[in-house]
Structures are given as C-alpha cells and as structure tokens.
Image (cartoon, rainbow, N blue to C red):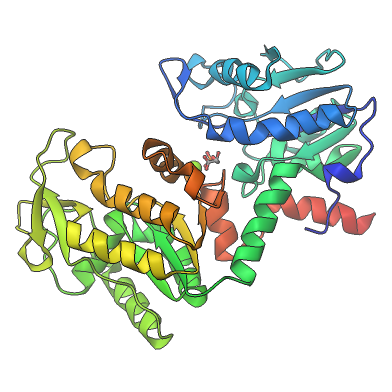
Length: 394
Ligand code: 3PG
Ligand code: MG
C-alpha cells in the first residue's frame, strides 16, 4: 500500500477521526458477534497511544434509509460492547455533523453514518463537512473499503491529512502476500446462495487456485451443470452454461471443481426439517439440498489437509439449521487443524468460525465480506485508492 500509514504520523494533540467497520449483527439490542469490534480495538488504542487528542469513530450499521434516525440501525449496542472491550466509556453522539467536543483520551462514537443524506452517494458537501471535524482522517474499515461513500472515500479527499489505519494495512498486506506468493496447492472454498453474485470471484480464483470447492446454492448450480437432479433446491438454471464453462476452465488449467458424492436433503426449508442422506444421483423431485453428505465432507477434509493455502468464504450448507451444520463444521475443523495457511472472510463465515469455536486454528480471519471478495478478485478498493492518490500528489 503506497500511502501514509497511521504509524507514520505524529498524532500528538491532533483530532483523529477514524472510520471503522462496526457493522455487526445485532439482535434484541445486543451485539451477537463482536468480531469486527474486537478487530478495531487495537487501532483505537494505538491512536490514543500515539498521542491523539481524542478519537472520533465513524461506522455504518446495516442499510438504513438516509435522512432519519432509526432505532433498529442505531450503533447504541456497538457503543456498549466497544466500551467493554476498550475498558473505557464510549459516548455515542446522535447529531455530530456540526461538531463534537472530544476530551483528551476520549473515544466518541458517531451515530450511524448512513443516517446522513449523501453518505451512500459520496456527496462532496457531506464529505467536506466531515473533514472539518478532524486534523487527521484514519481509514481503517477494511470491510467497507470497497464502498466509495462519504465516510470512506469522500472525507479522505478533504481531510487535512488522511492515512490508512493499522487494521486496513494488515488486512491488505496479508491478503496481498497470500495471493501473490501462495503456498501450493492453493484451495479456495466459496459458498453462498448464488453463482450470479460470485461469478467474477469464482473466475478469478480459478486463475489463481489449484482447486476450487463450491458450496451452498452455488454448488447446486454446479450439480445441475453435471447433469444431476437437484429437486426443489435453490439453484440458477440460467447459469448452468456458466458453471460448465468454469468446470472446463478448471480442467484446462489442471485444476478441479469437485462435485459432491452425497448430500443432505430435506422436504422443506425449516429449522426442524429432518435430514436424509442421498447419493448424488438419488435426489428426488420434492427434496432440496441443504448440506453436503458425510462422504463428501470426508473428501473435502482430505483436500484441505493436502492444501498449502486455503481461502474460505461462505458455508457449504445451511448451518443455521441444526441438522445441516455438519458439512460446514467438517470444513471449518479441517481448515483449523490442517497445516495450510488459512484465510477466512465474510459474515456467514465469521459466524460459522464462532459457532464451531475454530478461530484459533485459522491463520487470518478477515473482517471483510464484500471487500474481501473484491480484493481477491483483483479489484481496486476505492477507499484505498484515494489514500494512494493523495500520497502520490504529495
Ligand atoms: C459488510 O458487511 O460487508 C460491510 O460492512 C459493508 O456493508 P454494505 O454491504 O452494506 O456496504
Ligand atoms: Mg454485505
């Protein structure tokens, strides 16, 4: 990353505004997975340790309608969890655009940036207003670095100084190294519901990886592409030709996209639906595929054990339902126990890592979902690009 890093700057006495990605799942007013908050804590501490006069934190939560406050999208639960993790009070400020008094050593969280009209459209006037509130803008939200919005990109143009925060730097460097000089064989595991939303990333991963495992609804489209019945399963008939092309592409490059040997199916998409094991060629018309079967789980674990590098994004089954956790659990445990260098990212993936208690075994857990995939795809992240442009222009 050819841009200023926070560690290059003298923050003594400066008003620091830091963009984090504290977009975490909230249920009943409580944060249910605090991985992103935990990841931001060291950066906030570092800014204070570098002498910042105080830290004004920015984040979004969910996708609220701009222009008005909504309890449902308030960062209040995040402020509570963050203050527990930081070990100091974190004040949440609802109306902050006209300025906030931040005491020495204080951390203040500004209410959801996406309540402000113009945030999503990267409005210049809004970006300039934010820039007035600080001496240094620190972009640290890797998870939102693929969005060119006022609090990620716009403000970085107009702040007196702008730099990359420690988390953003670590995320980008780790991914860059892993993708540029991977230990081989390199395996990618990509789950999710639709091939259409992940076509570009699948294609670019095929150029880099030796093997690609697909999971979830994506796998169903590949199963259909190899001529098997998927019953009532979620799949995309329109993308069957694309799936066939990707399978051919993998073969041409000496790689492979394995098709499951067996599957877990159910007659309905419900949490208490009982699971039945089916061989690949035995799925019935009234059944839907909700997980891989035990033989396939063992096959995938074998592939993982043989890999030098594993990139994991997305579960292989509907692990929210107790009867269909096994495939994702087997994959998670194999990744955690294997010798490979492992990188995981994405909201569902982080939830699975938490649920199966395998975080310790994963070498790098990215806070990015969409940003992680866009980086892997080789796209430039606009919030990084603006920092690099500023560094170039001096
Ligand atoms: C994410 O959860 O992927 C990031 O926080 C970005 O959120 P967004 O997709 O709503 O921009
Ligand atoms: Mg998202």
